[in-house]
Image (tube, rainbow, N blue to C red; front, top):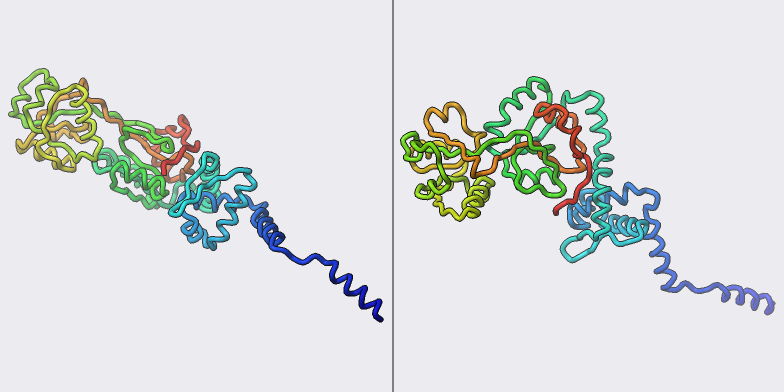
Length: 344
């Protein structure tokens, strides 16, 4: 009996006791193989975290716990073989490798998430659905009316929304996918944005018919110095262009009134409160009857208006139909579907 007990005790003592080191290795293996084989979940966690800036926001948007998102990101980094995100106290930022992966992963994730909806749209065409176009006040007032009328006649079931925003806010709507496309003018085109200029307008000097400059056959830039200008607010493109030209040519100028809206500016000019330099897009035949208009293209650059969209975004049939009204075949000549660097 004593010999058998000895053998039993010896067998029990031969099993190695669990250690903390083994526990850490087990946890490490768990994160290494967590969601392995389901690359889509990893990429969704990566894209949402990058777009929203924090793991907690990404987890909320994905209806997951924050630890689950963290494990997906760790698994993706291990499979890619390099760090993709730099985690700080406030938000996460992309490494160079993460930036490259984000450019490739974002259109894939967005395309997969919109697959059902886009399939239904493609099979029935631009017959229903929703289209949001971001544009500034002048574009909505002077450029879009005929386009909107034609679009509504052709696609009456599409819910069309025009977001009246400035250029900066329009880009924000595009990047947040709150607008399908934007129509407007651009001076600086970010790397993640595609822009196709379509319409071109000359800069125009407007003044009352009895203004001293109205009698001159040729107007020089220096001739404007004695008279106060009525211009849009400084944050808008027109003011920046006017200031740039005067500064480059070292010609002094005076701003009498800053006010938003081309109609208001034209009204104030007609009242004799100053002169203005406007874009030809806002000059109508009725304006020429009550204002003196002179072309200043020799001094100021043309303003181009066109289609603005985010690179890598999948355009719906509704958006493509609107663009085709602006210029048929416009999309076939440009790399709108290529990915671009995102300026966050």
